[in-house]
Length: 375
Image (cartoon, rainbow, N blue to C red; front, side, top):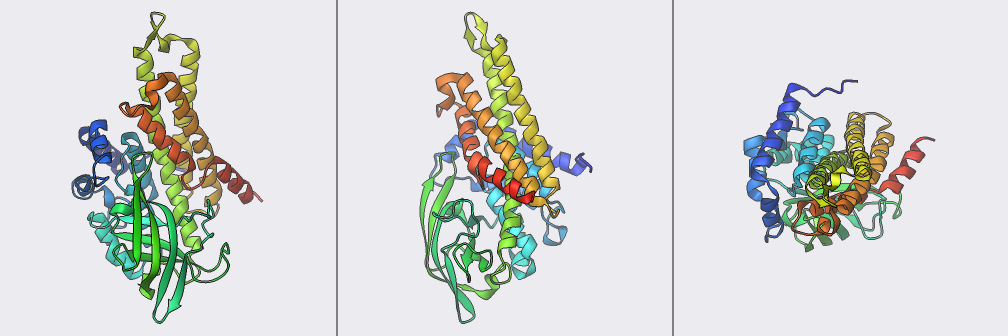
């Protein structure tokens, strides 16, 4: 198995890193976070037109650069380093993941618009009772003539306030938690009957509670055969988990680097606290978690197309969920009270690390899932 990046992948990392270092500093990010919009359309446009990264993971037939999951991993690690709040995960990784796998007219029409920065997608899958069970759905899509009528409530839909489209899971048959009967729809955000309640998330993003009341969708908005959507959802979510792991690698690296710099400046008893052996050992442990996150993410990403994908993805998420907690909590502890202040970047990295820990399943969930794959 080849662990080396191609020249094109290296150039992708360098271009994203350079752009974010030049234009996406902490102060700029905080102005965006605290602004009315909650994101920067100008940055999204630059991602599309200046950097071309919105097309990095798409096939050349759709106007992309011919990459895939590795390119998403590279971009997401840089996203983590800069705490980017623009919707790369929800639009390119998740939205693009559904469309690439589903193919057909929706893919042909929407993927070029994603690459051009004209479409933003939010994934409306979670429900209040569902926890991490992707099949636990009370949202229904009832067959009505040539289309469907959707009713239900989706919770904590990240990036929904500025999305142009939603990817929605709904039950077209079976019981509430059955594997069969799950369908997936691509729904324009301005469709009649959709209402939102928007709010900020603790890590600087935006999310919504979305309510569907007699929302009519056409049959051609299905992204898999009716009732057979769960395998598609599971495959895309596993790719999203790997991408979040890559983001975690970037977040923990910045937490470690920021803590190391602080330990060289902060003095106690007339000496920099970084000279105390106990803190040196602690920061070595933090560094090891960062490097393990990088390695586990690469392993999971390379296995996404294999039959035992779920086992490797859950192994990575279990390890990395524990690692981001360890690194984040130790970063805050070494910084002291200022480590959780809004004025210091380290506190915002800690908040994002805390959210990553539970996103798409916490460590305990993925440990159980890993064990189930070993039978």
